[in-house]
Amino acid sequence: MTIRIIRPGLLTTIQDLGRTGFQKFGVSPSGAMDRRALSVANLLVGNAAGEAGLEMTLTGAEMEFTVPNVVAVTGGNFAPVLNGASVPLCAAFPVKAGDTLSFGAAQNGCRCYAAFAGGLNVPVVMGSKSTNLKCGIGGFEGRKLKAGDEIGFSAPAAYLPDLGRRFLDYREPKEKEATLRVVLGPQDDCFTEAGLRTFLESTYTVTNRSDRMGCALDGPKVEYRTKADIISDGIPFGAVQIPSGGKPILMLSDRQTTGGYAKIATVLSTDLPLFVQRKAGDKIHFEKISMRKAQAARRREFREMLKLQDKFL
Image (cartoon, rainbow, N blue to C red; front, side):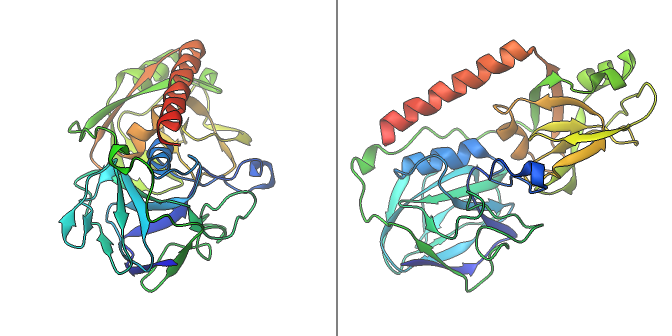
């Protein structure tokens, strides 16, 4: 009862929504970069939103199934093909023993997710199945997948009720620019007024100095009042650090647990999927909003996810 990896792609790992409660011990949360995409894929195949699936980056994997199951693919469009025929994104579809599902290079976005009915049978480490590459824990042997790996299913399903209704409208994004809403702080007082205006009024470019830990942006330098260093404190997903060079770094799933550079702002969790699907060369703008509006956006997203749970679970 397995998936056999024929071709792993550039970086394919097992991720769920991350391990919480261990950052104080120096263990990064890890988890899916696009949490919304993974959650939707899981709901489409009847799983809880936080079940583990495959995260593929820039180029996709090729895999063979040894048992029937139901699969859903979300996130970036990596042109998924089942036995040579295209399959839709954001829709559940059945696979049979001996079927081959393959993915190409990203046609848009840069991260693609595959979820499997019943979930993946890998060890739970500190409350999560997520792969932490730097610590070498979680997922499949704590590493990215390679050819020949075989991953078991926990409870595969050859069929799901209302299979023909398990889909969502997929609109392929065309824009190469994204506006990310941010809440300023917690160290925005470390920057001059001119520096804050630069941050909020400038266009930044996603660079290829990017991984699951963080992404460096190129653009105008943000001016400090005195210096970049602070007493190290905790780093949330979406924190925007400004190191001594003055250019922003956006911290992501495998970020370090603490850091000593001032954080000018934090990107809304609801907007992080926009960012993590950007490729090198794409443009980024930051928009300041209040904490109250940020919380309202999170509540709206939570209600939308509850509707999807009611529809598919």
